[in-house]
Length: 297
Image (cartoon, rainbow, N blue to C red):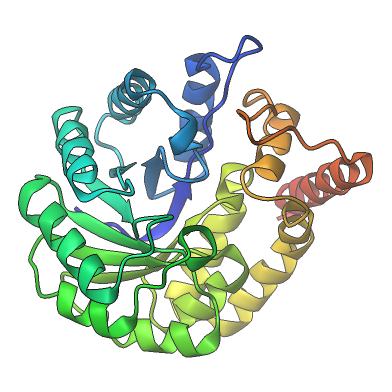
């Protein structure tokens, strides 16, 4: 299993009645594969994991595994606030065919570094899947420190980290932890190019939902060490990244789905649809500009 490069944190489309829209999800999966996405995350934070019922999680993951058919790795978001629940969901993801588990730092409960260390070791020991740690302090209110990551990477089932802090100091500290069998993946689209030039093996991306080819180009340039090509790709993506920054994820990225025929813009409560007309216009314009650039290339 090779988890690297351009990885999409998939949005979850819902139908008008609020049910899962698996037809739209299938189109989104096909769009990603055609666009060169190299791995997929199902039921992460972009996928509104905590708004999914247990049976919906199972249906979504099973559908993705069958549709992808082994062409790229499928990671399941299995992180819960409690360790026992995380282990149980990780085991179920294994049964449904996931290749690895993306496990977020326990949210809301604010564990200590020792608590986080023991939590992730329990999941690695008993979950049955390779584990990619996921640190996103803005959502969890806890920060998995590099020293704790250094200890956790010694476990053979802990195969990487998605680090969503995009400051230069953290990028460098986590990049130094990468080695064979343990990958550093950026979890922040805005600093992804910088992180990959510093040694990240890839990026788990939100914007890739809408522009997989353009984001794959950024990843190829940056992981290949081409600073000039990285800068060009980053500049092309900049208007879309700014447009997506108008509301908490995944509100804005879901507003882009219907523009591409990939599903409804409506998230589940307590998230609400993007209502700012100016923000929606900026999103449409940014997508149109990237499409024009792709046609001219």
